[in-house]
Amino acid sequence: MTKTPSVALIKGDGIGIDVAEATIEVVEAAIAATGAPALSYSEIKAGAGYFSQTGHDIEPGGEERAGEADAIFLGAIGMPSIRHDDGTEIAPHLRLRERFGLYAGVRPVKAYPNAPQRLADPQAAGIDLIILRESTEGLFYSAATHNGRGQSITEDAVSDTLMITRPTTEKLHNFAFRLAARRKEKGRGGQVTCVDKANVFASMAFFRKIFDEIAPNYPDIKSGHAYVDAMALNLIRYPWAYDVLVMENMFGDILSDLAGGLVGGMGMASCAEIGDNHGLFQPAHGSAPDIMGQDMANPLAAILSGGLMLDYLAEKTGDEAFEKAATALETAVENGFSVNRLRPMEFGGDMGTKAVTAEVISQISAL
Ligand code: ATP
View 1 (cartoon, rainbow, N blue to C red):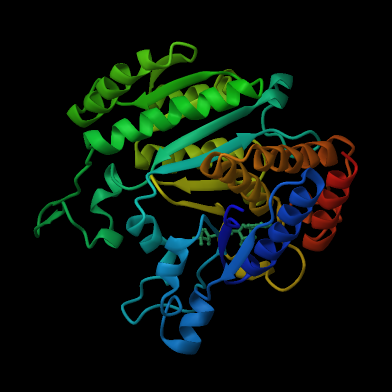
View 2 (tube, rainbow, N blue to C red):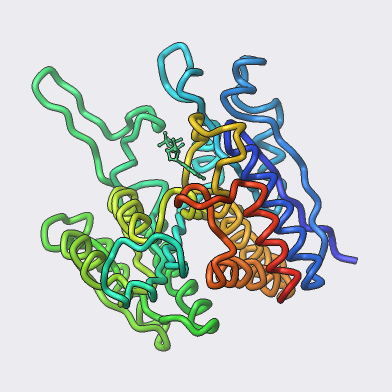
């Protein structure tokens, strides 16, 4: 018998704990309904709460255990009131991104019926795209979490380095095309757009050059380019025209929030961070201390991230049953919205974390 796939579970802080628990319930329901293999869970204590009790931001050996698991699921980490002595946030998850080289940040942006829609054009109901954000270099190469490497600071000028390397960019663009191919199999667009500023920066021209080298290896997938400023405009004018958008770290940071805003709030923003051998799945929102402990958080961002995890496990283990489980989870959310039985408080509805979770599970059993 093959080994039981394992998930390292970091619930974290605030609403992270509630939405992580909700996600595991839904993932288990999707597995049971589709006959996918059982998962084993290994919980790792980490976060601001753990730090205030122990002085450590993650339990001893926790990073290693996360690395041994087949996937890592994270609720949310951080509390504004709990900081390191130098004022920086408690952020062990950012170390995991570095340690495991999680270069591919996947942020799905999808419109659901009866969920908030910011654009008046009825075609906005068809928004279904992915922002693929490189997550280890780009302009974040010089970030504080990298100890400011590539930075120059004098009294009169400060500069940060935008780093694009060939190995990471090749992996990123290949990831983008493979992702588009998988989406095409499920009836979606089959198109990758390289978003850059190749007309101004040598680093961005290099990013585009590598894209153009790789695109011909995927003849079934359409490819195109756009400058990032034009893309900001187009994402408001006709976001439904796009499928996979691949871009540098800082551009992805900005455009993923813009695109996320088109289809609801933080409670819908799912996220996967994937490297060569590891995948970390988490909602894009934080621990939201203002609503913690009140059964008010929308767990759907986390639950949809659980769907991304099942999809990842399908690819990693080669077991298609996980893909069926992922599809069941996504369809359940879609169906729940269609019949207006998913009404999260985040959108002015009457359903808290537990009620939304129970409804998704009931939609899974109804499939
Ligand atoms: P971080 O810096 O850790 O990402 P943040 O301070 O930017 O966190 P979040 O914790 O993501 O912000 O939340 C911002 C606000 O959005 C929260 O205060 C909360 O009101 C709302 N919010 C975030 N996530 C959810 C959710 N899942 N359900 C409902 N409301 C949410």
